[in-house]
Amino acid sequence: MSLVRLKIKGISYSQTQNGAYALILNEVEGDRKLPIVIGAFEAQSIAIALEKEIKPPRPLTHDLFKNFADRFDIVVKQVIIHKLVDGVFYSSIICERDKIEEIIDARTSDAIALALRFSAPIFTYKTILDKAGIFLKFSSKDKDKEENDESIMVDEILQEGETVEIEGGTSEGYTELTIEELHKELDKAVANEDYEKAAKLRDEISKRN
View 1 (cartoon, helix red, strand yellow):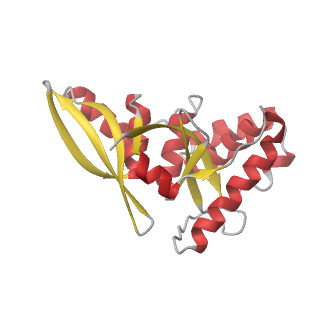
View 2 (cartoon, rainbow, N blue to C red):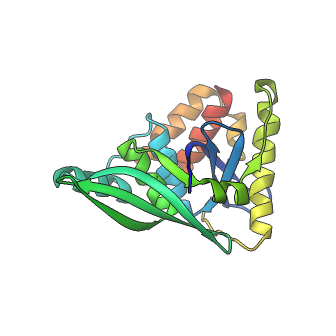
């Protein structure tokens, strides 16, 4: 089966269900997107890895795994989303140590959080993308429409039975802050290890940029 390389487009959230997140993956040589519902901690961890400005004062679980792997010369070479069953994605982490390759089963959200930290490529099989991929293609001037459609996409996934409960509020209220105030709130959230709030502030800053 042929593999398709994916890149992370971003993390979207539900407009109707408070705290529901979806990781949006995009095929590198195409326009199809692969939305995957993820949990709160994983959403925070992925957002932090994507945003280099966010530096946790203490290592998160995925950072700890990276430090552990580095200490024992274990390298994550790639992540493959290899199966889709009843709406659940299954992934494998391909690791190497002393030129010996190992395949480790993992939740897709964890696998991607680690792939980011190792700068490892992410793949899926063409059959999975054909089955679960979604077309969303807009011009750059339609960026707001695209973000809105991705939020609607999350709602449609949740309506099919996948529900994620996440504590905390939405990004409402941040729209009234200036960029300077957003950065100050971001620094404060990271210092307090409130990574969910930090991720939402980062999203708001990204929209302004």
